[in-house]
Image (cartoon, rainbow, N blue to C red; front, side):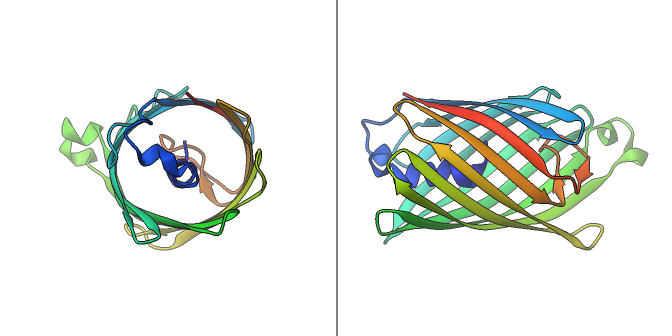
Amino acid sequence: MNKSLTLLCMLFAAPCFSADHKMPEFGLDVSNTGDEWIVTASGYLQATEEWNISAEIDSTGYLELGTGYGVMLGQFYTEAFVSYGRADLFDVYDAGVFTGTALGDDWMVFANSSHEWRTSSIGKSFPSLEKTEREWKNTVGASYTPIDFIRLGYSYNYDKKLTEGGHRTNHEVRITLKPKWVEPYVKYTFGEHRVSPGSTKISEENSVELGINFNF
């Protein structure tokens, strides 16, 4: 589940910050890039007004656990977050900050910045194979709700490759339907991007993701 868009949904649904909204949210999505298909299941819990917990696992075996602490600073919802992911050959650590604000009833803008470490798990047993890659990941985006049951989203991603140098950029366009309790969506990504958080593959092919979130 996309971190920025998860928090985006929270901000639009402002009552979720109250003590009466502690029910978990679940998501399921299928993404396709070229000839590669990945299925991801995710969960999210607003444990208290400030703290949240998230988890996801995909069909490649990648498992990620995360937590965040968020508060309202004036008109801006701001959250610091950390996560740990485990793949077959490497561990992924991420720490960052998200912020977003509503512009009237229909618009929201948001930004996300984080530092990611990808460390070879084989290096723990074989120091000569130790390898760490670092990236500075940044996202800016906007969301528009023209009518109550449709939300349109766009985000621009800029990932600075700190270890090897250079960068990659991509764009995401997302359409979400918002009937009661479920939110089906389609997301289209174009530009250079990582196929999945647990993958080493970087693709320039466009990708499509279909998913559904369950809100109880």
